[in-house]
Length: 322
Image (tube, rainbow, N blue to C red; front, side, top):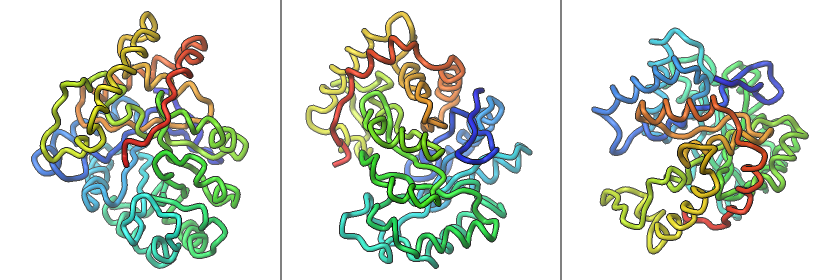
């Protein structure tokens, strides 16, 4: 496994992280916990050290599983979580007030809940689960961050940037109090390279790249005929003719990567780690076979400069979450 320094720290984290949303709840909860824990243990054995969770992933269930697996493994992991907005609005609206989303006492209260779920004295990285940069100069969030760090309950603090809004966090980054940004970044959404990546390199702020497979598009498994379960949220994400749009674009990418990558999923991960600004990429991977494939891809290393340049042409500006 390859490693990178996390932000301004001396702490190394694995370039492949584990996105722990899928193990948290909903249709994956209950009888699948055993399978989730088996995959988590395999991830640790494979050298993965960063595990990204959030309180809302199963109302703490994802955090609890990670805490259990860490104790069982005997390894010291880099565990992250996120404070959900108090008003439970994703993404943060332009007119949302900081006191409605992240008052000081609430940030501290939710962090302490996550600590209990992890069965830990500290969280390596705590993050705001949404953000509005209009809050950057306000004191309430800063007071909470300072207090939690001074008490040793949080080592680093970051922002999980709103979907497809990569610059919405840079003002907060200017304060010097933000250690990382978690942002959507993949072959389709290349927008973080415009402003955010250069900014983070200058400020030495870590980047956690999320949604590397565009919710499944960049695995090559979404076809015009794909049918999701009735209550699967991807019915919204890929509604209308979106599956057809995705399929047509993926076929063009397949042509580009032929000869250098075995699968488009491999290309997707190796593309992301080809950027100096990216610290860790965090795909979700509940199945052991997906974990092992992702480990192999990241261990192979970045794509060639020639292919990286070709993939710039596949930038696709859109927001399927709306």
